[in-house]
Image (cartoon, rainbow, N blue to C red; front, side, top):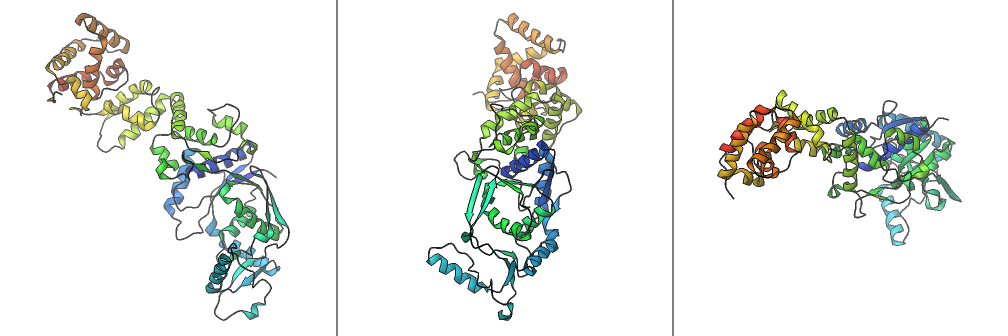
Length: 472
């Protein structure tokens, strides 16, 4: 039977980083084995599920390059099928009506807690005749859990895991209003979707033994299970907002490339020797569950930044320029036209080797689309505020007005200027950089000059020379 995996998020919020890694592992495992990777939206929690969350999950997967091979399955639309299976188990004597009232269930829990036992249903309606049911109580359907022996799962990550059946209770599979419970619906959906491998977080491991009851009662073959460890923050605690961005789209907004994020998440719990940078093609070639570790992974944003920097350096400058311009266009306080966009495009090859994110790339390129008069950072203002500095800027404007505007020529002209004036090149470049960018940090000054173009450079130099700035 061909491999079929699925990613099954609940649409109650954004696609969490842990969910993104689960989707990636399902995708890679299916591709490695020439199988199919599917998506199921588990939207049975009608109060918390939203269309916005559904759209966000699908958009996140598209951005990551993890779109499913078939249209998504929506669990809520399959409720009639879930109920059909529950009633089949009822008809076969493998499930039963339970007429317990909320008060009785609360009493069971309290008694168990007082006696130091886990609060489980005591099976009081398991063998009773429904004719004994109290009036006005709508029943639930419970599955008959095995009472002897143990349930064994050969987990592809965790190894052999066993649970004594005495620890299992007769779980509800159909509520009194006719809606299925999550644990029951998942089994029916996985069976009907012909899922061969269930790859999910190890927080679902305890659910597996309860779900096996449905598989076994229906006589359905169990899929192979693989429960992967969770992702924690650097402090070992559950990953949360306080650790930084925790959703796929947060990462996108922070300027992380989807290829870099997938590479980082792949290495977060899986490894192949010392390979750190792993392309999608290479990942499909190598990925197998036997290489997934059992210990929880820790999110390291510095490491992610490093991986992102590697992918940025490998990216086509044209693609980065497009992304940078799109980011700059979204900054409502900045408006620019074609000429300014051309300046950004020229800058990218010099910004690319140093940037760690698309956000940083946009930040560093933003001076190219700034309008005159520039806003000067305090340190930059100090470089050009004195009368001597202003005279230097005017002198440079006159000198550069005659320069040929090729990058290699601009570097030579600046060096010649410094030699003629008997000063160091830095004494030329520093005020020039401040006047042209409003900052003391920028790409090489010849790259700045070339990208801005002669007319813009001369206009900025004159404007900076005439600006009224406080002398510190």
